[in-house]
Length: 402
Image (cartoon, rainbow, N blue to C red):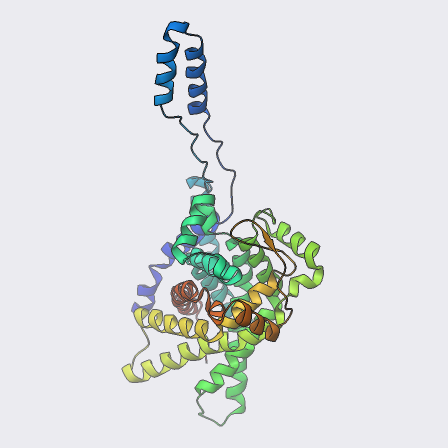
């Protein structure tokens, strides 16, 4: 009870943080720029022109010395504080109510629903907390050497779009992450249980077993929610063309490449998901089990966060080149825009093998690892927060893993 109580207290803060940031991910109408400075300048110019000719030279000199004031740049603002508060309280209330209703229930189907719910909540909160870093990672992977450093891209997004620019595509990402992480953990637990049932009595799952189970889970989840992944990438790279809405992104994809465009890059995604998710689950659960055997007690909050971070970093590094190619393939027939504003033709590759070869040959091998820094910066805290929330939700829902 003490351990559960310790982990229970941060939940409201994390849920409020998630809902507040998620609300800010949707662009709102920017305020109209102020025209008062411009009107004042024009008024002073008109008065100076109406002066007698004797004093015209001095009037013009004073006008020339006075710097012209430019209207301030309008920066989009997010929803009102009251709207954020209402959304935060509503989301927290919904999560708390669903947790209270599910906790006392039992059964195979209910257990699966609990796992899906716990993973979905953990996935959405963790990804939203790290959405700006994921946005930068996506931009750097898709544009290669045409973009600047991580700090420059973050500053550029803030300068052009304000807070909403840092969370481009996060709305679609939340719609994707919830079913994706829920499916991953559900399939992962199912495959592990099948392995245990087919093994000898008292057998313990090895690291290889967990790798295979995690890889299968990642591939199944990726196949189910892949169109949402394409929409999220389009909203991140081409927000103006997509009108900053999931519906606009779907229209852009279908117009450029047809319905097949919603599954562009699905093959490298499935291949990448096996080591990506498999390594993450394997590293986290294997290290967590060994730690608990060594310590003789369940892993605490700090241990869970650290082990989740290690698993996330290893997963990202193991599949990053494939991640670069799959994100570029997701852009389909959309023309790439270079830094000087000119349009570049679509990539001359249509599959994973040719993509890896072409990018490595024409742009350099280093481009295949472009964005690895911000991707790890995003993946490490995201995975750490995700496993912390997942373990917390499992305790509250009274469900256990194999």
